Length: 292
Length: 248
Image (tube, rainbow over all chains, first blue to last red; front, side, top):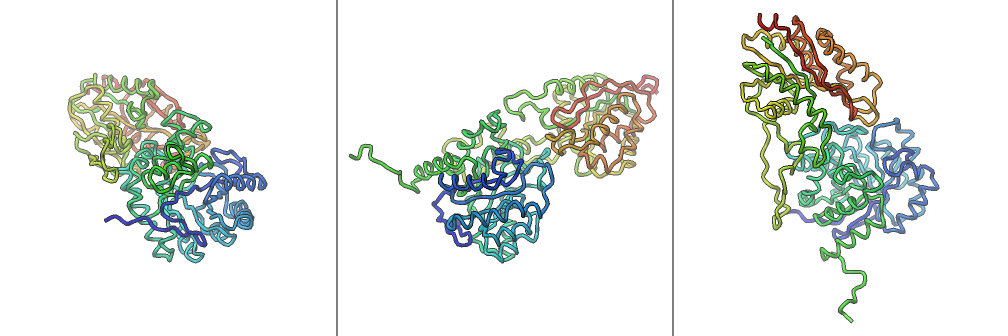
């Protein structure tokens, strides 16, 4: 029998298995791929936090380093970009879970001290000191599959005999390593990391087979917003990928994904509420048709 | 005895279905097809396909590229309606054939070549001297061999490139192109191995096999394609061995 999905705990926050969560992207970078520095300014970033929370975000994911290669951002600078801002968000919204998008334990330490609840290690466990640090703070950890890819590089002719088998093996291994380091299993999330160490065919395959990840029992993070595999599938530029993103989101939600990292929070919230209603996990907001 | 050689890159996008409905770089594919057609027309006893891989070895000549490793689901619908999405479909496991040799074999198939083939991979980390030696061994074979070399230049030609931009890449690739164009293959045998690795020029070992195979021959070359449309240097060339040597 397959393990059941259970409650996810991120420090003081608990999320029931039926609740589909929106993780809103807030970049503290001048050069991230989609928003291109719109929230580089701190007040603009806080404005975005206000907006995404009003739009229904459950988690705010704060990042200080873009995924793409480019200008180097060292630890000091990454901390400077993220930690004070996390502290400000924590002060303004005690009930919202805060995630930090980093692979470096030094950054995670400062972020947790500032109030972060979850470390979104989207480069797949490159820093061996990260799990113990997270255990110390009682925070959550995202265990992501990136194949052999190094941080801030692009995939180059990657191939897998079976990409989903590799995703399951690598994420399970990272999760086991985290548990061994003392991380509470209720705080661990897995992520196929679409586009990371994958070509578009691979990202489509992991989408198609997302149920295999959900079957592990670990909560599954789905990070697909505006990504290149959607752009390549539809032959559309960044600004035109919302429909593709939402289509992918709904499929992943149907197949058992639980957390959805998004640029377009209001639309993602609607899709997830719709899917949750179709699944029967959530009642319609207002149903009177034929009932009056 | 080497009677002719062709140089082609080995990006997966050469295989039409892998790029989906779009036709990507048809001119590159055409150049490769023409180079391979000329190679096959030389009526060799064996076509030796040489490309880089994880290890140096000879593969089963019947092995083919595992397309599903690059494009899972490319064969059609993966899930039929009513299938349990939690049960993964059965998939054919590939032979493990390196991509370079798989592309080479595919090009031979496209050319309807039905003769004998030798699939030789050369390890990415193989030292230059070993690569040159492998080429010399091929050249010493009594049979008439046509050499199909799959080799790619740097992958760092611009900021959109797989390896991002490295200002050394253009000079590196120009030197390879010059060496091939002028028949100065000795220059390929002394390529800076560390630099080639840094520039993600995966073709380095295969170029050096080519250099070893044709080191004393008089050549004329035709460059059929030389460009870097996705930030990776692709070079297609036909290398014609002068008759006095080929008939020796």
